[in-house]
Length: 221
Image (tube, rainbow, N blue to C red; front, side, top):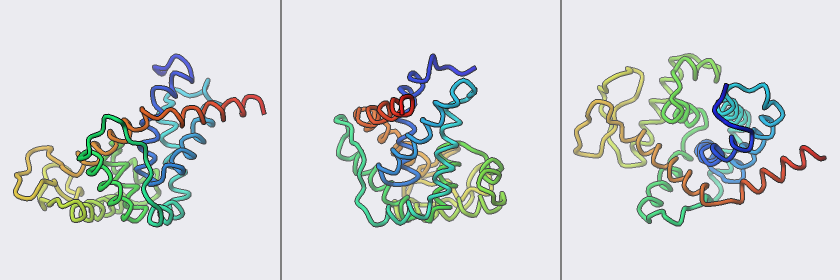
C-alpha cells in the first residue's frame, strides 16, 4: 500500500517534483504541464488499483516524452526558456540552473532521455534498456555522449577512469579539482537544477488550479 491518504494528498505532495522533472525532459513549461496533467488525470481513473502511484505517473510522463521527443526537442531549441522562479532564488542559482537547462536542450532526445533516467531517476542500465527498447551497451554509449557534451557546455572536465560503473563516461569535477569517490559534479548540477525547479513550482499555485479544474471536468463532463 502506498503512503498517500487520498489522491489529492498524492498530487499536493508530488506535483512540483513531477513538473520539475518533466521540464528537464521537454524544456518547455506548457509541454511539461500538459504531460503531467495528462498523467495525473489517468492516475485518478486508476487510483484504487495503483500500488506505487508516483512511479506510475513518472513512467507515464516518460512514455509521453518518448512519443513526442522530436517535437518537444524542436520546440525547445526554438523558444525561450520559461519556468517559474521562487522568490527565494538567488541570481547565481537561477543563472546556474538556466545554464544547465539550456545545455540539456542541446542534447539529442535519446541522450537527454537516458541521462535523466540514469542520473536523476536512479534507474539501472538494464531498466533503461528495457523501457526504451535499446541494448544495455547503447544506454552506456548515449549516457557517455550526453555527459561528455554537457561537460564541455558547462565548463566541467571528465576523469577517463571513474570509480564504479565502467560504462559511465566519467567522474566530473571543476577544472583543477580532484575527483573523489562518488564525486560527480555533473549529476550534482542536474540535481541542483531539478531542486531549483521544484522550489519554483512550489511557489506557483497556477498548475494546481489548472489540474483541479481538469479533474472537475473529468468527473462532471
